[in-house]
Picture (cartoon, rainbow, N blue to C red):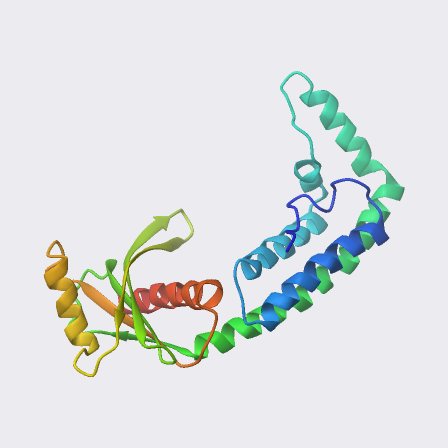
Length: 238
């Protein structure tokens, strides 16, 4: 499936029918992914494009950044004047406003479908701590259990905290370790003990299980949602 370029709005011919064709072609592909219960990378992609168009609608100066072309120091002022003329071109701006008037609600409609799918998937996943978790839970093991399958995926995870003046952000990095077979004698608690023996650098690791109730695409949906849920769970418990 072809991605929607970051500067699709101002790249090439600025014509309502042409841009409408490009957008609808892209959204048709996104919809087919959503129909297959695949969320990523297109949900985050939709969020980016929707927010970008909203920003452009509210601030015409952002059009400078969206017009393609490499700006060198020597001709920066010349290009700035050129872009200024484009922004001041009433006919061109009316065309852009017509494109924005169609694109924003159309993107929002597909984005709402993606959010509904995300909420559905979130309901099918449950985060459960395994054993006694240490006070520091920003790194450890993540067990991903799909009920419909005979194996459990084991990951190492690490949560990083980023702060600015206004907010605190948390990001998560996961590393695949192994896939283990389910057995009656192998509980998730005993699997945690196996991991402690195999990887002695973590004598008392935080370990969480993400239990998945239904058969959902793993890489495109389960893992991205599972990681976000884990970050939310640990943040709430901190």
